[in-house]
Length: 403
Ligand SMILES: Cc1ncc(COP(=O)(O)O)c(C=O)c1O
Image (cartoon, rainbow, N blue to C red; front, side, top):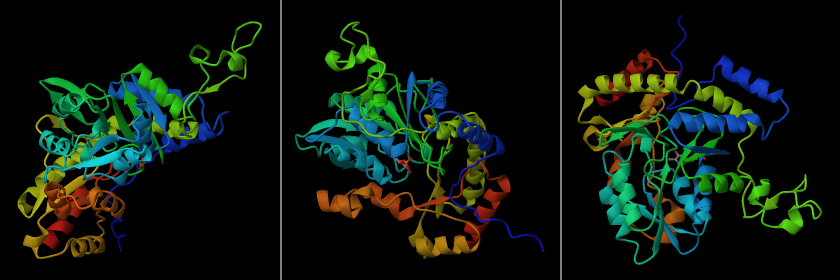
């Protein structure tokens, strides 16, 4: 009897022999933590996304927190975050004592839009807006130029939560760009969690075109410490009195930083995965196109999260919007039936403002776009190790549920 087809999770890593070999080589090298692969990974990633600088860190949450630290976000500040995202997007502002104002999202794309950002700005009630953190949900790009203009008009900084969107391309006014190149934002934050398009296990990156931000990010991810004699500010501590040169052991802690470093071993995996990013994103685009074709007959009960005309996304998540009411079935029962047929699914996301922590802090907020998204969203399997036949299997299982 043929083996049953393997279970398809909604996302998973693709680790190949050369990835393993790269990690083993790093394990046998001199530095397990900060070593030469860190800078090599940063340089390669910056080049890949078209940014001047990239700073590696321990995960996407650390990347978002470092961005807030580098901007000196603090008590009295407000940060605007879309209600549909992972909790970390909002939490990074709270770590700094800033308050979060949740923006609504478009009910179909799940994205913060110029309209929902304008509405959130109207709820600032005189408080200082320090940063706006749009999320490229699933890998679908937000409308960066318009959001940047709105943020700038408030004197606020745009920081992209690009944790889903490595490889996403865009064109505004016919100019090709890509997520992370920093054309419209101060910083973009990436995650290399295993379900993402490329992985380092845990891992993150901040890209920026601002050299001052890059050096702040670099110091803050390692305790706020600098070893650059040119940056020293305490000569009596750091310099040799006789020669005026830096002591060989000197370092200065100039700000309150963290240990958010990404080890050399994981940067080895990152370098190896980055070299395959084009293949991974091409496969994700091909799988997405197949889903698009095969899911079309299931509309309007099941529809794909729509893309924007200005973007060519490399999707991290394949989200369908299901009209569970019309179907007469709950999402739970649909997920259970899919699971019984070997198909995993997930929900991205429960609106963050409805999480008990935020509901207790800010009270009830009426964000109808976020609620409408949450009522219908379902993430189906999408990962680079899938093949066309796997998409057929997922759609077949879904068709069985919808029929
Ligand atoms: C939109 C978004 N932001 C931030 C994060 C945090 O990334 P990490 O899990 O690497 O800390 C994630 C991770 O799932 C995410 O999906």
